[in-house]
Length: 314
Image (cartoon, rainbow, N blue to C red; front, top):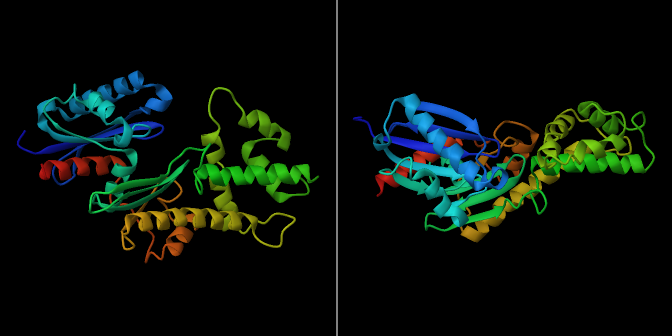
């Protein structure tokens, strides 16, 4: 190959994405496979998924391992801050001659969102976290503790507030007929009474975080349509979205303070922020951003760009 080629690997919570690009970030191939989060599928299984994905990407692009100048990898649950050796182990056998850049899912999302490696990323999807990479080399993460310890302002947090509201109203004596919020929530889940939430929520085969987070879309819809709880003159859903925005913006403010970088560029990522909705707009307003941040690239292309950056400076 006459071109200089780079590979990016993005291991999110549910999918593994791999892209091979040229120096202009034009993709030569892109594949999607099963999850490779070592915390959920185990390290051995995750390693097998990653190595099989690399082989499939090379086959699709009709390339040899020696054709890849550099690779960057970010895997949920295996940040380079604590799992650098494992990340290298997962890719070295497949690409023995390439420059390897162990990273994190947050860092590659930052590079993708901003098109550069320095700045701040606010992520809000099922969970939430803030990642910062300063020009002096300082890297920090705030949040990202998971649904049991944090994830304030996330999809899980929004969905949990809705479920708590519904169960509290039911305990106060309100029914589907009395409270529109109870009725709307149960209809969305295909349930008849709030008591059925117990069986819906506490399934043994999986953690409840993703199911609860799926209700975030309903909360945003209620807020956008000004649906209000029966016992309130205000807009309950709007208040909850506003609280989520305040919590997320506060974490960005803390990151700016800890990095001593008030003018840092801020990128958005995650299903709650990567589109124009009430929450993303309110967070942008609270951060005094001139417009809603739009990611320049996907996280997998962010990984490929990070590989190119590291290769160029080697």
